[in-house]
Image 1 (cartoon, rainbow, N blue to C red):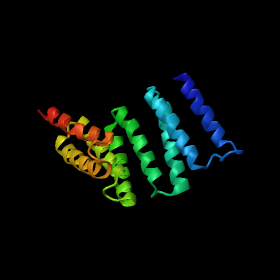
Image 2 (tube, helix red, strand yellow):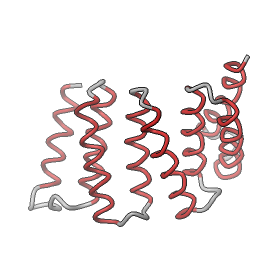
Image 3 (cartoon, helix red, strand yellow):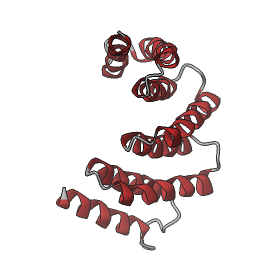
Image 4 (cartoon, rainbow, N blue to C red):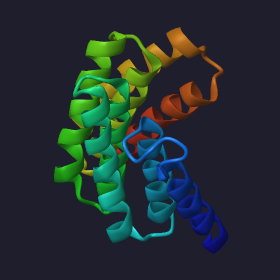
Length: 169
């Protein structure tokens, strides 16, 4: 992980340098999210959080509040909170991203399916099964329609529903 971390940091510094793109560019936000994801996967949550927040702020500044990259940044931060068990902080971010994707991409987009699945997983972890189940069902329906029944994402989403039903037993 040290090598990957070092490589991500060097890449971020290169992108931010004035010779390339400057420090106010969407690719900088992407690099921040990549480094934050690496930190999150290493369990370095306190280092990941400000990077996710900086990426979100940069996306909003450069692209406006109503852009798919903003929704993606919201989800990234929500997944960090989810990983930490901070469900009350994750939930509104997941909901905001879902709303944004629906507004920008339509109700039947694969990103909407993924967002529904993320929110359902969050509810499932909290034992909120009656709220999770319809979200799983809708996510699977969209994924099957847009990606196909055998697509890996569809299969993952479809497998979540039986696990939910087992949890309720």
